[in-house]
Image (cartoon, rainbow, N blue to C red; front, side, top):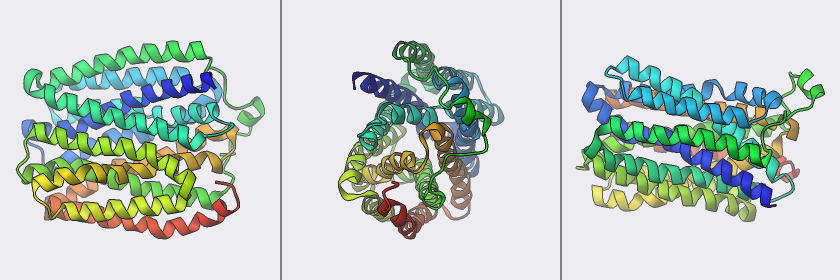
Length: 391
């Protein structure tokens, strides 16, 4: 069990670093919009292409991990992400910034499927959903600490200095990841047997209909989260917020999200997957719609409970994936699942950016909040695999 906890701790550190990279973008987008004179569609495209880079390599990462193990890919991916942000600090144009973010996103694509696979393997015998909830909780700690730190640092050392400082942390983390996983003997051996590798067309999904429903819920959930967080800073600025206060607001959302990811994984063990998903998704949609009507002060108060609901669903979904697939194909199955979710995260900001340019940010966020309720009929499809004990 001590090895399992050590593997979980390492995966949590990886998640902290990568989610920190991903979510400092929400602080930087208004800064880049002002400096480069971007419209909302261009702002959304920046986020879209970073998430798109993440989506591109997740399935290949899962397939490569079956042959080479997860450890090397996790270390290399972390280093590539950090170098992408180093390069972003030297850019002075929209196109160059896009290229840097694509590269950074591709490096970060290894993190979710491979770390989830490591944690699932370490906790094969039990408490896997809680372990994955803890893993997700660590990512939200990165979302709390890193964007808030960058927001504080930007007025003092500029956005380039702040980004390059965190990129240096990422490069150091890549070396530490490699050393720790080598010491633990985790993620170095091939995940699948030679026979399984030869039968490469099998994706290891035991319940296709249940996996499809779970993936559809994640697509809606991820597009909601990405769209909301991309344009929340602009909504708050319109209500009178400063850039520093936006950093605080994001910290409040992510702090709630950290609690939600940890708590909802445990809650699903007690109430079940379906009840927990319904509770979190209804709370997310209703709270986003309420936020549009409130002044700045009341909005800030509402952000932590919104964060709990907004991010809590993912712990329930991630923990259920492992129950719907075979253990020797888990890395590639997680790759499919995360590709669909991150792909939705990639497309949502650009789509909602177009809506914002056409009808304003409040209209776009109203649409974001309304779309959440589409997850509710999908939970009905999960009843059979859950009742059959396959999830």
